[in-house]
Length: 211
Image 1 (cartoon, rainbow, N blue to C red):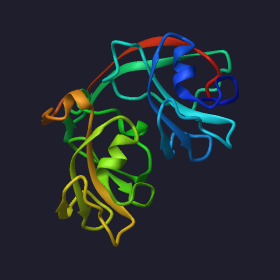
Image 2 (image 1 turned 135 degrees about the horizontal axis):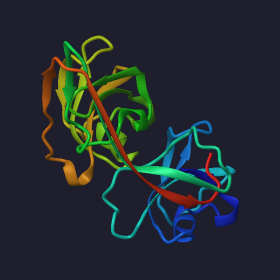
Image 3 (image 1 turned 90 degrees about the vertical axis):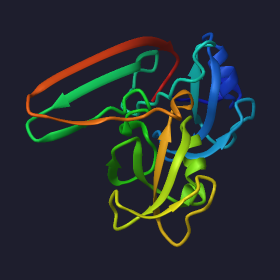
């Protein structure tokens, strides 16, 4: 969540501890949103800003994916979705089983033009991460399992690279990111001819100002 720095000395570890959680990731945001400008250690002060991005977990749940909802404006308390599974199918469409492998694409930072693909892969900007998919995935608590240059602003792979190798000469790259506990998770894709929808959600209440 995007939280105030002043009450906690610019430190996400102190913020998370204030309501019984532990800090997993600390960062400065781009522009009052969930996009990461740069990362910091949890116990390192983020200076020169009035707010910071803190990823907080209950002590026994540090492997879960991050939560950041830029539409939340309640300054006292918010209800943050801890897990959401949505399945929607229709005639002639395909459905990918990625829900357990990575966070929803709406929570991924710096996706270029909204281009997302199957199997926890998206077209993302290279500049903020030095062209490296490992750094991109780490920026929101995931691990990189594949990196590539795309053909033409799409999901087609032009050249494959290692996760820790910079992809140069381009403004975007295809990164496959998965939750740490699901780095070997396999995804499934199926086609269906019926129309159904199901959504389940578990929530917790977090005290503190979140924007």
